[in-house]
Image (cartoon, rainbow, N blue to C red; front, top):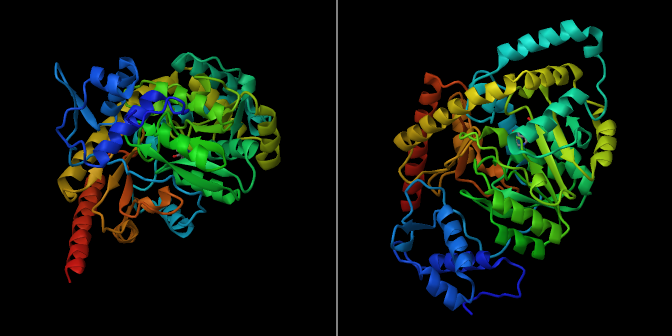
Length: 488
Ligand SMILES: Cc1ncc(COP(=O)(O)O)c(C=O)c1O
């Protein structure tokens, strides 16, 4: 009945979502049309009313429909500046990385102090904890003297591991044993160790699309292939698409940032994260969970890492202090129940251990409550910067520009007029003293050619505003140029 298949493994409410979405895409349901009532849909689709309600609520969260009190659910008229979920008819194929040279050029710009830094995601720099960390490190050096210059153990300083475990308990109520935590050189090494623990060269790793370019470079460098899974700007990875991908390709692991993603700034709802764990368990696929932004939601509501929402066995959670406290310390971690021995072996082989002085400093920073206080003051600054940047984009960029609505973190994702080449804009911006991240580098096949990511993770200054205005004007000029070219 109506395309609902009760024998199929896909959750029934997901099938209802797919059904409505297909009808919207096909133009059968137009903006302003009323969806069938819960009762009617339940009857015709042969599913319960709560199932239909769940589907409609999900569609509302995806901003495809809106509920009107006492009236029902209606297909939504899209606001001009919402990022649109791309619709695909087939799942993407696993792909090698095509944009490495451009990625390298983006990294070249990241460390240039003469550029306005809109290209690097560096949230804690919006309100650096420099003074407190400096004071703490001085105190540690005075107290620990030579010991603080020595090697830390492979899994890391026990006091820091205990503080990280306590932080999970405190923020999401999840019990973690310090023995399940390995301290790493930043989140990047955490992702590396986790990937090497569960996958081998030639394997396929599923990623969100768009996704953090560091993941793509890592997967490629390990001789693995990335396969992109449709990711909704409001809800994160689309689980029905993930299911199709798992059926179509031999996926070994997923590398997702479901608590707070980069570049979309989206949080997957906890109940979807729970479903995600179930789905991956059913397919015996590991989840490498990138949780480096989890503490940075503007509303301070800490999403629960997938590790704590179902069977832990195949979930490896990667965290870092780079986004929240000090990227230069290069301190991150992996939490893993089943793979911790493999991770310790790989850590020993790759980097032996991580900086001891930084670990002692961060342990103290957390234990004193300074870390929580710092987050409390950082989040409102990030929210304010996000609002200012969105407002300036609306003012200076062409009207058809669409922007993400991040719920945290430090980046905005922009869709520019269709014909615009973000690589050209990147080159022009560098020449004008501004770094940006072109959309190409957020997909293995470099498909986001008319997208850019802008960072608001820095103290807001007149130069930030001037840079956004310059970019908006340049985008308008380039868009006008491509329109003229097409007319000739
Ligand atoms: C989503 C995501 N994961 C991991 C990392 C790497 O973090 P780290 O700097 O701690 O290595 C980054 C850094 O940009 C990131 O954005």
